[in-house]
Image (tube, rainbow, N blue to C red):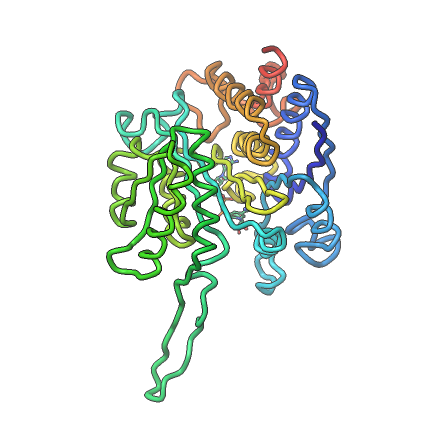
Length: 369
Ligand code: NAD
């Protein structure tokens, strides 16, 4: 197949991890005979420095004309003093909104060799493989009325509104069931239907959507219990589908089960062009030191293959290359443990001994297989 991929490296470690993900995609292209065209553009702080805005029109136009977008990270102390609407992070909201991405997918998976990187006990997290599907454009973050008003008695009153339509729930439900079909065929819908009417509708619509997916089990759980079960017995979950606010909170909780933020990819989908990015930020504290972990971005490229191009076999090859790299004992600093070999992102680095191959060793594994 042929695909045009917009490559938006962004700021900080984004510039170090993105070339590694592109190398892995190139290796996939060679091995499986796909033609990937990579077109880079500016976003975030680097775009502000060049043209004064975090999301230039040309970048947005490129994203819209591409088959998928691969994003690094944006932000950093240099731009922190800017007015909110001009901050690098505005580019993230802007691009997600412009592309109409209403579903955010975040896997939380524990690689066998990294079980001990988690703060939880091995027997609790060993083998977890969860996908949190979060509704991204509705719910309390967008519902109206919203705002802060002055009351006659001098007090203030803050309001936000949790609101969902049948169609908004149906479409995120379908994303969850489709994803579950490619996995262990179990969807857990998270709500607060014992208290909230919007959740009552959410539950009813999920039950209705399930009728089109008789091969997939549907379970319901209240959000407070879900938060507890995630740390008590996370292995019970396969796909968790959540509204915007519950998904925001639970996806961070699920992610942290796995240990390092440098390992966690994400996908935002729903419209023609999907956006794939690591969940971490630009990590200014480690940027430029050649110690960033590129796995989250490489795994995001894997999600792009699966969810944007339906290249499941190729996505699995990336997964296997990551596992193999870890099996061989290569680690970036954030996930190092006794007996492992600490490497940098870039194998060409002069700061590291030339025998250190870096995590881009994944590319090598792909080519060799
Ligand atoms: P962060 O995710 O950048 O960093 C948090 C911690 O995780 C840091 O200690 C960092 O060194 C570490 N870390 C992050 N990515 C890593 C990697 N690949 N390998 C190893 N360690 C890694 O979050 P922050 O420090 O709160 O934010 C820094 C900047 O990034 C801010 O400007 C923030 O607004 C921005 N940000 C951007 C995104 C995004 O682009 N999607 C997301 C979150 C934060």
